[in-house]
Image (cartoon, rainbow, N blue to C red):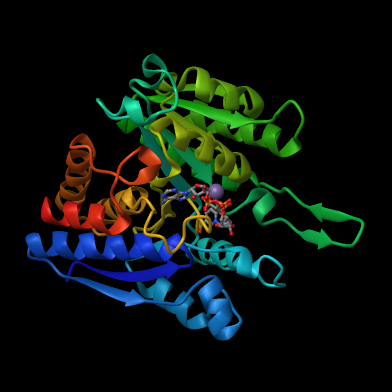
Length: 346
Ligand code: NAD
Ligand code: IPM
Ligand code: MN
């Protein structure tokens, strides 16, 4: 047994793509003669329906005892008016696991430029990694919600910025050696602290890495204008959420984008960057690739199975190169037929 996986399908298309990932993982593990233990847990809206809590104690315990957590997506219109929302469960889980660094790679592979809505010459050679701070900032500050006034506090400490910046610099050393740190330091105090802490760490430990700073509004433009000019993009929680959905379009669809959320240990949380996609849920239209690439990242980072990870990634690349794919990238496959094809061609 190479690893205990807490398996949280969640809601909407999360359930469909998580099922796809489980199928591919089982097939890949079988090919390599290893076994994986899946512990399925109720989470998100489904957990609110079952026990009134999006992150039940039992689910949290299984996740804390696992080697990795594999998650589909949560949320949906059904719970929009509820006092407790599925998304609170997700924030609670990220915080309980202390996975403060969310890695969101975006690539446009050779020959795949046609999926991108951008001109070929702009989409060519895009290979960037967004490192999004995941357990601080506006998402976790104090909140007040009145009828006529509401407040969301944005708070960052130097230690929180330094630890996620270290992950970004380390990643850059293994890539093209460049970090672009994104903030709003012309307006926000937390951004000035952010910039200062990133500069301090850079001078102290990572002078070999090339560091630039960019304001988030300009960055949202540059990401479309010159996406291949970026290597590692380091930013705070909310900016990273927005910029990563924007960046996913470079490759053609949000359904292609994976993520790994890591802390100080080996255990990680793996999920595609998209949500429960209520507009296509239950129709077999969801692109499973972002989820499958997240499962591959899990095999590499948390379960030490780089070979299995590459096997899954290569099968996905071959399928896309052969013209297979779901409707969001112009293909004819269903989530299931693409998944079966990938399993057969591992
Ligand atoms: P979404 O990411 O669910 O969908 C945005 C658009 O992308 C939709 O048009 C959808 O059809 C499309 N899309 C998403 N995933 C796709 C896939 N795999 N294949 C093809 N197309 C795909 O964002 P939303 O509609 O703003 O949010 C819906 C719900 O999901 C909300 O409740 C939100 O809070 C939640 N959400 C959850 C997560 C998560 O669990 N990590 C992430 C984002 C949003
Ligand atoms: C994501 C999602 C979540 C976030 C929501 C559902 C809380 O949009 O994983 O990107 O904002 O982090
Ligand atoms: Mn998001």
